[in-house]
Length: 287
Image (cartoon, rainbow, N blue to C red):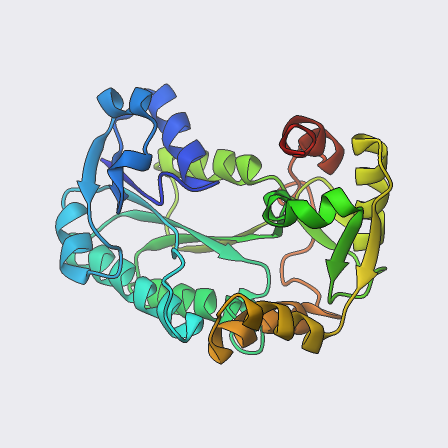
């Protein structure tokens, strides 16, 4: 049995579909089953509950041979502690049920362990899973293309705002490409021990270059604009976020400035989908 968490998320939904198409019948852990694709229901077993509920996670993963784990947003005042709480559930399930293989959706920057905002919580989860002694693969992923969908209004206005230096390059990746790697590793039975694999997308991009690509694909001028950390704080506070939540987001960008990932770009860490191709298929229709 393969267990998948966040089966309605950007990565988890694709992982689930790929496993089903490979002939598996995964068990999916979900808080709101109404969000699942109705067409998927005949091919999966559904466990309804909260990943922060240790007893639920342990019970739902009994008999599992492999686990795809994602720390979902928790709404905790301190997002780092929230992610660590989710990681504790995963580690307890791995130990209690002797789950043979776990693929964890982590992030570039988790290797810092401290000083990368919310990402520090993913680093805590890595440590908790490592401590189980079971086979685990940490997928340290780059910046999701789909983050552009979170601020469509700004894109419509032709502005791409960021606190990062406009010429600083970092990895950008399509979540679907991450899912393909995760699904293949969940299906593989020939690996043991602790592994880290970065998922860097097709190329490293600066926000200035991203704006150029979007201009070409969307047929409208898009310019990158750098804002200060305090400007971002003010915007996040206007959404009603707590100070810890604000600092969790601001800290991600601040912590990754002038940062070199532990895993370099190479054949294994490079994935095929370009930003231009993704934007043509997903961003342009959304506008």
